[in-house]
Image 1 (cartoon, rainbow, N blue to C red):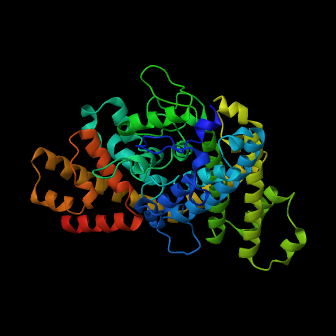
Image 2: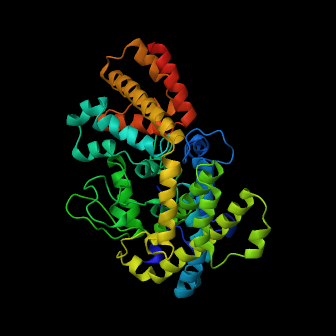
Image 3: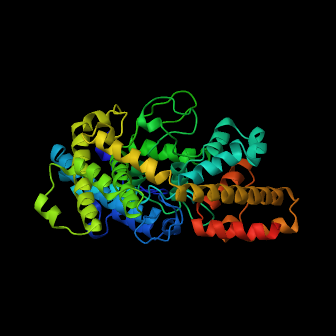
Length: 447
C-alpha cells in the first residue's frame, strides 16, 4: 500500500480526481467529513444509546455520543502525531501532493467519530439480540430463503458493517448517504471482510466482518481505490486494513479501557483505592506527586490520573505504529496496536476489573435482559408486517404498525434479504428510549 492512494479525497459518485494540493485549507475535505457526521441523524441518535450503563440517568456516565466524541479527540491527537512522522519520512507527500501532518489527524478524527454509528440500542447486547432473533428465535423461518452469506449477516449482526451501510447506502434522491472521502471510509473499515468465512485467521482484521452483502460492490470499490491488499481467495472478499484504521482502533481501545473504568468508579462499582492502584501503574513515570497530593476530591484525583493515562497510551500507540509502519503498509501486521503496547498488561488488568464490576453489574444485566425482549418484539412485529405488505396479506394491524416507520423506510425492498436487513437497520437506528417506547405501544395493543 502507498500513502498517496490511502489518503484519497475521492467521494462516491465523483467523476474527476480530487487533489490535495488544490484543496482549500479553510475547508479541507477530511474536515468536511467530520462536519457531515456531526450533522447526521444517525450520529445524533447516539446521545440516547448505551455505552456501558443502559439508559442511565446519571449525568457523568458516558453515552455512545460522548464516547464517540472522546474517541475522536484521542484519534485526532494520535493521527497528528503519526502524520508528523510520516511527512518527515516521506517529504514528497507534502512537497508534491500538498498533504499536511494535520490531514492524518482529520481523517482519524472523522473515522473515530463515526466508529459506533451503526451500533443498535442497548449496547453490544443489542447486536446479539438481533442475531439471536434469526439464529434461535422466530426469525429462523427465513433461513432457507437466503444464501449462506446473507444468513450469516443476520445471525451475526455486526455494528461495524451496519455503520458502513449507514455512512454509504443510497436511497431515492440521496446517493451515497453522506458521501465521505474514501480515506475516511477506509480508516473506518475495522474488519474489511464479509461475514463468511468466519474468523478464518487470527489476524485482527478477520475478528469480525465489516460489510453486508448488500454493500459488497461499493466496499470493493473503496478498497480498490485505496489500494488495500486483498487477502482472500475464490469468491470470498477480504482485505488487509487501511493503516489509519489501526489508529482509530487504538483511540477506541484507549477510551473504553480508561473511561469505562472511570464510569465504574464514579458509579461506585469500583472502589477508589482499588482504581487508583491500577491507574497509577499506567502513569508512574509521568505523575507529578506534589500536584496529585494537592487534589482533595476523588473526582479530581481520578480525572488527573485519567488524563495522564490517556496521554501515555497515545504516545505509546504512536510509537508502536511508527516502528511498524512499513510492515503495516505491506499488510503484514495482524495485531491491534495495543497488543504490542508496553502497557498491555496494565490495560488488560483494568479491562478485567471493568468486566467483573461494571459490565456484569446487576444494573447492566437487568437493562440488557430488557433490551433483548424489546428488540425481539420489534423485529418480530415489523419483519412480519413488512413481508406481509409485500405479499399482499397484511392485516389492518400490520398496516398500522408500518405507519410507525419513518418515511424513509416506507419504500419497498422486493428481495427478502434486503427487507429483513431494512428492518434491522431501522431498529438499529432507534435510541434506547425510542425502542422502549415502541415496545410499550406494541405490548399495550397486545394486552
